[in-house]
Amino acid sequence: MDRKGGGEAEAALAAFRAGGGEVRAYEADVSDCARALGVVQEVRSAFGGLDILVCNAGINRDAVLWKMEEAAWTT
Image 1 (tube, rainbow, N blue to C red):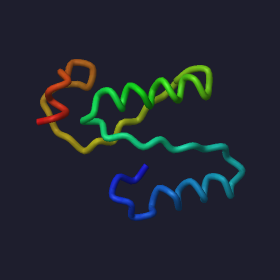
Image 2: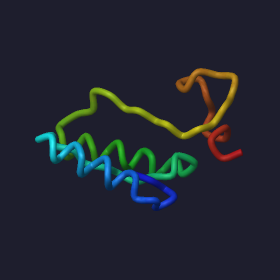
Image 3: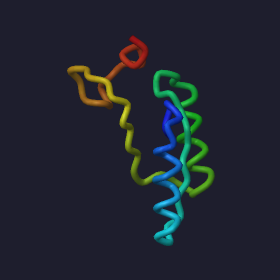
Image 4: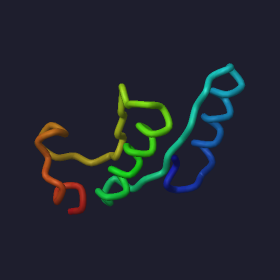
């Protein structure tokens, strides 16, 4: 979801639904590791699994995502 509340996320959801798609949005601040893990659990529970996850957090570190420590998300 759109953390800034500008309405772009809701407009995207409406556009997907208008095209016949099933879409859901989950809001989380990725600097809150517990909440991010909670969203993954919610998605897995709702859909029976998770095939693709896009994290568009807008941070820049010199490491690939799976090598980043949790502290890198909060500093």
